[in-house]
Length: 357
Image (cartoon, rainbow, N blue to C red; front, side, top):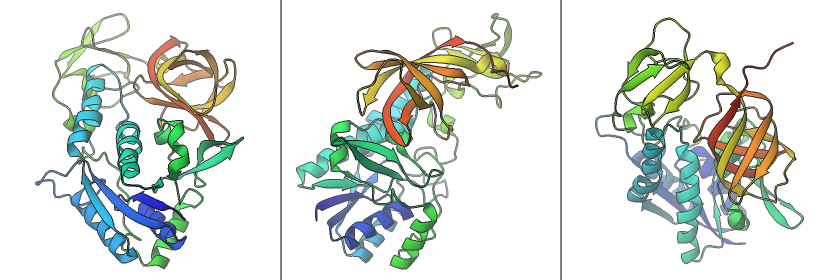
């Protein structure tokens, strides 16, 4: 049995994870991160990282008879995740703050904190698994494919995998709810948060500073309208552009000129991306074909590794892919195993939509 630190979000998943660890005989301690609070006038009391979540996690820990800590990391969150979020949008990119939070806070800062306190392992309520292949650990999809969260974990450094536990990775969401009721946990029927922890009205734009106004143009540079800042747009967007006629889609953002470029849906398709911040869980080979997920909830499509750099990768999709977006995470899989993660830097070779026969 091990001395385990469990990150408790105040939701049902991490609550059941903590209960399973305790039932297995581990020496368990819970920790809840305070990263962002709802505004006082929002009328919101729950959701990711809120005061209500901290209290729910504390109550579950008390019920299970395990110690519990609350870490106020709002300053760290502001200096890393939120700063990156704002800078990326100002640069015409679309960031993934959950990917960054896992990278810089949960699986870096918290792991170091836990190691300094003598914890042998850190656990979470993510739907993910660790599989050992030829003596090396790899991240694998959770059993419940509808809840699988490995896409958001693609930035985890491979060397920390042996210290991680995902107790509910082999369970479905329904089974997690059943176990929560069986254990008598107060979070058994708690609804899931579907929002960013710092955008409590579900609109990320309200978490950004107003940008400089600029032009909305077509591919030929013809002026079609004006906008209030490129941070309010993302590749593939159709609604809220503010143009009559169409339909128009955002196909490119130009931070250097401040222009939003729009076109038809056929202009959204491309075959190749270049990505940096490559994080590989095993050596990659040029020419190998993997299953690529260029965003969360993407079904996954075949893509070939065309080029490899020290920290970069070039990937070509076997058929044109819609709305490939700089700033988004690119996760590469081999079957259910996560092979690598990276961040899309550039989209190349626009080809038009695939022809359906």
